[in-house]
Amino acid sequence: MKISNVSAMIAAIGLSAVVLAQGPMGGPPGGGRGQGRGGMMGMGRRMDPRQQADRMTQMMTQMLSLTPAQQAKVKAIALRSAMDMKKIRDAQEAAIKKVLTADQQKKLASMASGPGGRPGGPGMGGPGMRRGG
Image 1 (cartoon, rainbow, N blue to C red):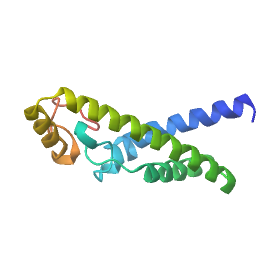
Image 2: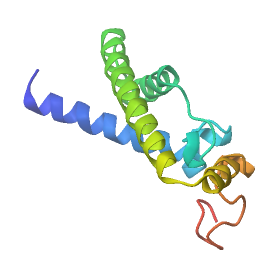
Image 3: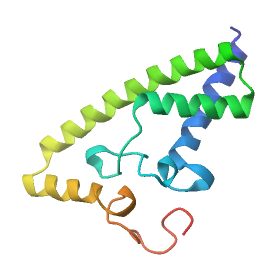
Image 4: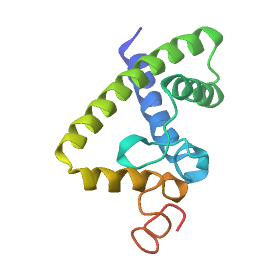
């Protein structure tokens, strides 16, 4: 594969990651279904790596008219990356949890169950601080 093709693929994957993080039309992560970022850090449920890879592949197929062979390769790359990122997030959350007191851990866990899976619920950060606000 030529360097320009590799660069284009990396750019497309990066763009897809940004789009996936924002959700449709700049809405909440995961399309507002509580499946955006998540885990201990108080951001709602995460999509599992397979869901992330499927979604990225679907989006790139629509945007770039990928062939079936390209779809299979992109999905494999996206799945590998999503699994690596999950390992990193899990390790980060475990390390942070060790730093927090029991009360802080409880507070952090309760933030995850806030409306929309976002810490603090509606209005956190004041007007204009949230997407679409």
